[in-house]
Amino acid sequence: MKIIISGGGTGGHIFPAIAIADAVKKRNPDVEILFVGALGKMEMEKVPAAGYKIVGLPVAGFQRRLTLKNVTFFFKLAASLWKARSIVRSFRPDVAVGVGGYASGPVLKAASAAGIPTVLQEQNSFPGVTNKLLAKKAKRICVAYPNMERFFPPSRIVLTGNPVRQSLLHNVDRASAYSEFGLDSGRKTILVIGGSLGAGSINNGVRNAVDTLLQNDQVQLLWQCGPYYYEKLEEEIGSRAGDSIKLMPFISQMDMAYAMADVVVSRAGAGTISELALLGKAAILIPSPNVSEDHQTKNAMSLVKEGAALMVPDHETTERLIPEALELLKNNEQRKRLEEKIKLFAHINSADQIAEEVENIVIN
Image: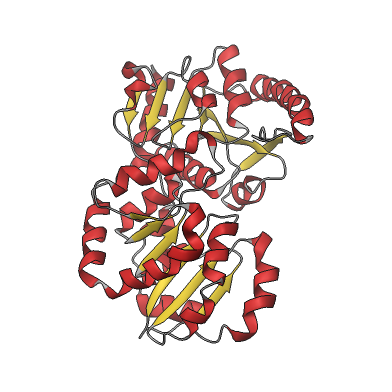
């Protein structure tokens, strides 16, 4: 069996894609898997690190504001479509799986044109334009939220949830986690993760409240700020962070980070929400305003309306983010309620379910 898996751009697309590949390979050790990503994006590093081969396309995203980058967008798209057709012809996959991200569109379009069956993995509660178009020819559409019939053909939808990194499911000793990050097991911990690339507004909200955090000897902060923001924040805050603020560009040991977190502050990407649900974490979600169809707000609201998470709008992070996180830390009853409610959104064995759908398409 030969499979192409395409997509990426952020950890929210890459880690589920790797989880699907791992599940397929566990069931079929002889399977041949080729990833196709976007040149210069993090999948070109993370996928080989996970043990898989990847080929890059020159594709880039279309900017929603007037910019010269949109002039080159069409040239890069044309080049990516041509290269995707070449990859499909030479690799000759039995099925192509798209997980979202820049590379997913050209690859699945090329596969469909060559008569190769395709599988879409739609992570969000509100799909983007590309997946709506690709869904017209997809054999299966694996979704993470119910009631997706308004966007996709009902007969091809399978509710699987979003795959998560298998490393997160390990039982982690909290004492080891505190030791790993050099933090105090006697304090409550806020974990801030603005996505794998970081988030400027979240970072600003935390930076403006550093003095408040330092004055509270009952609280500590583990802060993934993103590689782009790290140097400047380290220069501003590093010397006075003491032992209560741990600033990091990227957290590789997320299983340990989640294990010690009492409250998680995060963007509302579908992959992160799936992780929070599976692990039962009390969360404050800050939807990114820079995503298509404002889908992160829709993701967050699906939890908020069920009492499974709190939400702070992006433009209110400076005033509300840390005060609400500190308030939630003090309110044990509310925190426990959020932890129980978010577990109801968890899907176990999502990657295995998707792997089974992929297998069935190849066999049938």
